[in-house]
Image (cartoon, rainbow, N blue to C red):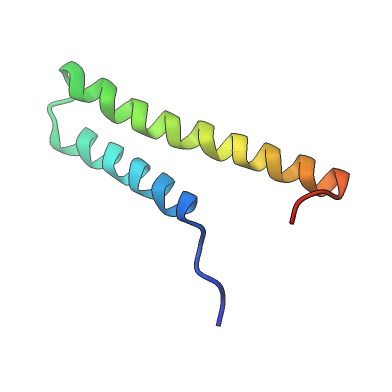
Length: 64
């Protein structure tokens, strides 16, 4: 049985899905538009940062 995904993955997925749903439901105007895009961009940036940390740990032999 595979291990469940880390909680960070679930949090990023929720942020992206919430942002996309807001973009679909809202009239793509006002503050909600910026909140939706902020959620999506924040999820992508945190994924990029996590990937960078993973690569650095794998390269240097560090980690758990």
